[in-house]
Amino acid sequence: MDPITAITRGGTTWTPEFAVALDSKKCIGCGRCYKVCTRDVLELIDRSDEDIDEDTEDDSESISSVMSLADPMDCTGCGACSRVCPKNCLTHKALPLGV
Ligand code: SF4
Ligand code: SF4
Image 1 (cartoon, rainbow, N blue to C red):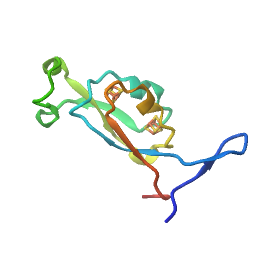
Image 2: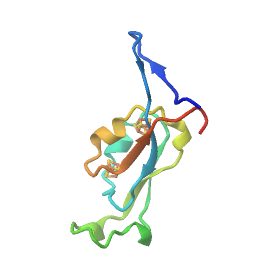
Image 3: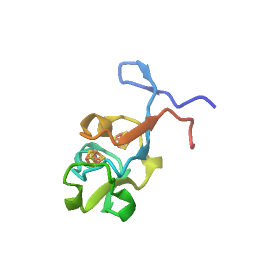
């Protein structure tokens, strides 16, 4: 199946790239992605033991929450979340409808 394509107001076609994964080990819980997302895709959750990256040298011990993809099927593929994420946590992909 072909990936979903969209169209701008001016008539230009573009291919949305949907948020398909969020690396909680890199996430610092800053909430920037949540602030720019216009849909109900993202949710801040308590950090679990699996989210702690032993190789991380920052003050990760003090991070109690990380972002998660609560409802990825609500994503429009705008890419705004990745534009503002300082840790490059999100992965995006062009996808067919309903996948
Ligand atoms: S790509 Fe857009 S709609 Fe999807 S999670 Fe990111 S900001 Fe929200
Ligand atoms: S912008 Fe990046 S680091 Fe900040 S909460 Fe979102 S995913 Fe985590």
